[in-house]
Each structure stands twice: as C-alpha cells, then as structure tokens.
Length: 174
Ligand SMILES: [Zn+2]
Image (cartoon, rainbow, N blue to C red; front, top):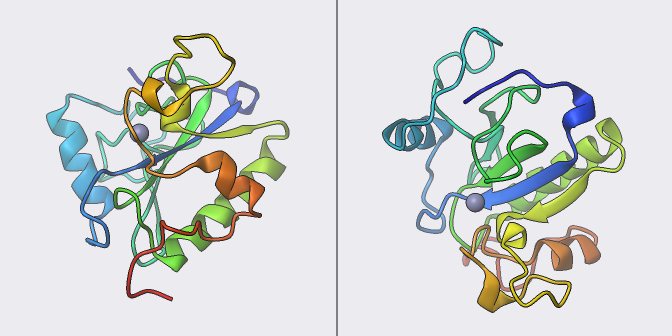
C-alpha cells in the first residue's frame, strides 16, 4: 500500500543493501522489476511525475556502484522496504551486499547530512537494527538479526564520521 505522508511523519532513515553481488552495476530499474515480482506497487496518482517509469520500487533512493543516487519513491510517499518503518521511514538501498565503492559511501554520507537537516531528529539505522530485541538486553545482537541487510554496522559508520567503513570497501577501489 502506498500513501501520501507529511514531513512530520518522517522519523527514520533506514539503510538497506540490494543483496546483489558486490560491485555489479544494478540500477533502480532492476530493483523495480524485482519489486514488481514481489507484488509491490506504487500509487502513481500521488506523485505521477516522480520516477514515473518505476511503478513498483519500495525504496526512496538507490545508490549505484558508480555513486549515482537514483530516485525511487518520493520522500512523501510511504515506502515498502522495512516492516514497521514504512510509514515513518525513508529507505535508501546500497547496490551490493556488504562492500561498496568509495563513491557509494560518499553519496550515502551526503544523503544523511541532507536528511538530518531536512528532518531534525531523524534516526539513521540499518535494516537489521529493526530486528526484535528478543532477549531484551537493550540492543539488537547479531544472533537476533532477521537478515544481515545492509551488510555493515551503521552505528559504527556514523561514529567514524561516515568515512567508508573498513572491511566494507570494494576491492580494487580506492
Ligand atoms: Zn533491507
């Protein structure tokens, strides 16, 4: 389901990965076709001129290996990317699984900076951080992850000043 929302709804920035082979240059159009197969549908009557060829994609942005950020859903359009966070979250997808190009890392940093200004108080998390804290110790431990997406520790990346995260940089890139 895809509904209009206001800026006041937006509380979370949820980072995902595409779970595609690292470094393979998939695009938002590819992801749109996969989300079509999963039965996702945008309500194109809301923002008909925003990414008009992508009628299914659940994310708001797709960060390609070359660093280009492609638009998916409009920011004020409910997403389809993370159960429990679709009405109040913006979903950004990094193409790859757990290693990303310096250009992708730089794009993600810019987006976080923009959205922190645009939506004061927004919380930046990784998809796996939304898994339930089943042992109630106050944090989501690796054994509690329902999935590994986005393939890196978002909190550690933020703590490091959003520099490309060691161990998660595409080999061969600089
Ligand atoms: Zn995800």
